[in-house]
Length: 113
Length: 113
Image 1 (cartoon, chains in turn purple, cyan):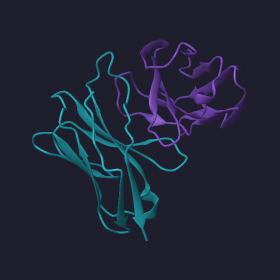
Image 2 (image 1 turned 90 degrees about the vertical axis):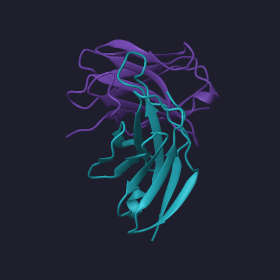
Image 3 (image 1 turned 120 degrees about the vertical axis):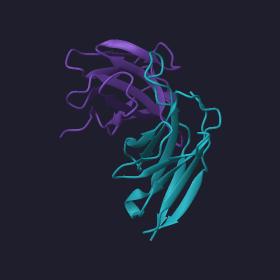
Image 4 (image 1 turned 90 degrees about the horizontal axis):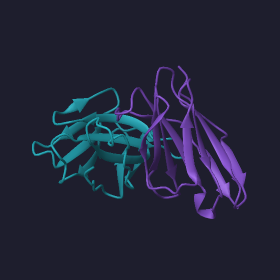
């Protein structure tokens, strides 16, 4: 069975640019969460979407936004990139919004120069 | 969600049981204990979770003390592939607003050949 997939694997952007990261959940999973992991720290929660609605938002600026599509895939958008946005961005899927058993993708490594 | 405390690092000999402790003294009655691990350069992987009874699955066992203020994750026969950062997470029940996983810095477990 296919796990959570994310694209692209790696990305290099310049300060001020915009980036879109994509995630496809496990088949049958309706909830997608996004996390940011900077080097040496644990993942930090950014958003959760369930049935195309935002169900949770972490302490991130409005430059970060996301959406979920009818097929339950999701996009994370970050505007006006800063050097501090350089991180591994992880997507996790679960059967439903309250499910703590989440399955993570391999992540997208974003480098902002 | 309640705060957790874990040792920064631990070593374990290959083939022996690895016992990873976690303190969560402020845990509430409806909060679960989850364990995830993250192997280098991969997304976190769900291991096990429990409320108050001990739990076992094909990967590990979870022992929760009677007062629920601490728990231990046991990997019964550690292999080199178990080298990873292990995260203990306390998470509320599946109510709106408790969807996120709050990761700390975890325990870096190194399996020694």
